[in-house]
Image (tube, rainbow, N blue to C red):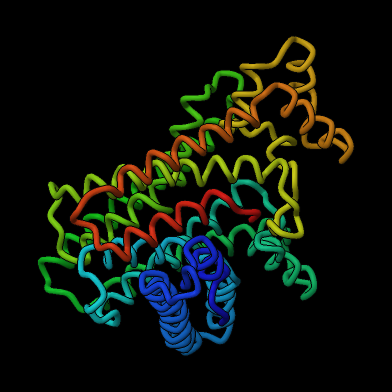
Length: 384
């Protein structure tokens, strides 16, 4: 699999050359980031091949099911979570420590991500992900094409839930392959478990908000962003990386990672809110305007409701799941007219500033500090 686009973006933010001369920090950033993305992909490919063979030995159809799960894991993606975890680890150990012992733990985060995405797509009834049919849609189409009994949509959702479950089990199994002292692996596991608990809590809050959007608030929407996205996209992966390196909980570095991770994680979700309304589907891989059709109580839409005049609020309340494309486009214009877009953009900028300030601690390796500064830009200035 080709290296993820995040590599190139990070390298453009922090070039490997400066003033015509080689920049050693930029060069190390390029080498380390390329190494981790390629190594995570290779680790996943090898691990999943073994797991598919094991399930195929039970029954050929189980092997096909496992292949569907594998495709959900390997179908593109930014590899942001293992990348943040990697730099959290490198920020402690520096550049000399070998990568292979911790690779299974880094790659496990992608399996956890696949679990969350697959279940989220079922809950949101999403048709596409990364420009391809979501797992439940693809499986439903296979069911219908084969002429099997029962409702194809229901079958697709059932299988997708199992795909997510399998990815979660696979993540546990791969994490256990990290070569670490037992006591440290236990600490890593505690961190990993807390990340999972907070992710599920955030997803529950997201579902709850969709069921009662009129009683939601900007702060509640931020809480969803904090736990559903920030928790397992940036904050906990960084802390996970530090735990892989053996850092104790009360370290100043842990406090810096915590502050940076929450700020960039929230900014990442705020960027997603904007892309969900104004992103180009050809780039994002998802239809534009779904949040508007469903009335999903994102920070952007909660701010728009707060700022809207009576006419704008009436427009925000009228568009629903059956809305025509022109109606969704007009609603996006209404959201912008309220000033909510500018406020969200300012919130993103403020959080990036907060994160960069958090990195100003002497205990973080210089190359990792530079990489994390670049990743802050990558995560918050994107089109997908």
